[in-house]
Image 1 (cartoon, rainbow over the protein chains, first blue to last red):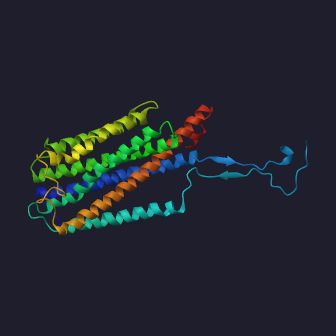
Image 2 (image 1 turned 90 degrees about the vertical axis):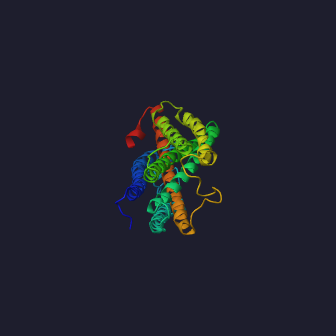
Length: 58
Length: 265
């Protein structure tokens, strides 16, 4: 078990916390961007209308 | 010529909705599978780092190495992805706009990964240095060139964020090629100049290396953070591509006298 009494032990814990906070902080931001991008995706999906034109209107 | 309607024909307009990028069934399960495997690898890496035997000189403090080393090594890999993507952008921008935009999206994704990994390399290195050397920082060759690397890629992202006009991708691509020059200098700095930073642990001569019992922790963490890096670059790439398509569609709508796309978003 890693202690928290000495400077070395504290800095080891700080270093591990820094890694996980920074990586998953960025991961969370990326997740929000992903959700935002779903709106962009939906807005740019082309809708192709292919009507069956009756001969009377041709 | 007027004709009578044909009986039995459905005259209602038929709408076909399709996506520009058709996702294959392989991609639909590959992403979540990669995410799960990455978290499993990260968990094993953390377990291996916590349970590796204590080091004779530094005690438990050396365990910072298991996170410091993978992030620093990978922060030398992502800039090359950025550099090659930027070169591809410069080559393709007058030949194939779609592929050039894809290369630009990969460049920005890898630049963000570079800044993230280099920030962690700096933070863990400083925390380790304060406890091991008694100082937070030394202006030695490795630390200085590494700080320069970090500043170069932060400036790359600032240029992308704040430059106006249609030349952002071009300016960023040129900057990325200049920035990549620092990578081999920074990587080799601990071999060329012997200053404060320790000599390379791997490939540093006969006295270098680590005990065999510590190797699994190093390999698991390098592999896991590599997988995580590929995941975030992949996700960031997709987000950037969607943004590019949206901006293109908005611009086209504007030119056509409407702003349907912007309203839809």
